[in-house]
Amino acid sequence: MPRPLSDDSKEEKLYFIAIIPPAPIYAEALEQKEYFKTHYNSKASLNSPPHITLHMPFKWKEKDEAELKDQLLNFSRTTPPVAVKLDNFSSFPPRVIFINVVMSQELDNLQKNLHRFCKRVLNLFNANYKEMPFHPHMTLAFRDLKKPNYQRAWEEFQQKNFQAEFVADKVALLKHDGRVWKVFEEFKLQEAVA
Image 1 (tube, rainbow, N blue to C red):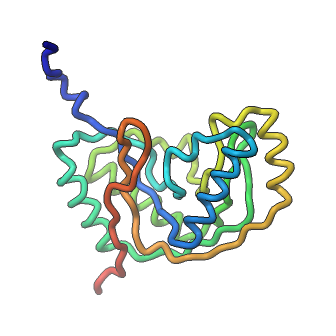
Image 2 (cartoon, helix red, strand yellow):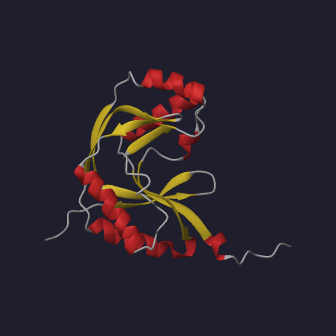
């Protein structure tokens, strides 16, 4: 009989924090991901729901999830909702195609404030945004999109239109279940009380 693992790192799970778009935008983005699977043999983006990443994946002890949720609830209670505008498609050559998110000061502030909060309160230091500046987007295809398929897909998608707007009134904590990312908990954003 195998011995139980005592290494603390085995108790850690992967999480990340994101904005999940509301219906019907969620369904439209999911449909685009399915289109990439069917037409361009790229399905990796289907391992997570449509989202805009605010904090990249990090490890956290599963037994301490209640603390993580409590702290994110505290953050959300003092953070105002943010208007989000989606504007057509864009790409990071040679593999990534995404729905473009228009950068706004409010969205930038939300990401920076969350990043600062995660460092200061949660002691998360894995996210180095100095090397990778915040570029909000909603990924449709990425690592498994082969270069020839990327070329064909980008020729198609750079001509397409996609316009949508919504108010991001919550942030989501996503958890990896060993196979895919799932929304674990959502935290409603609220205007700070004066």
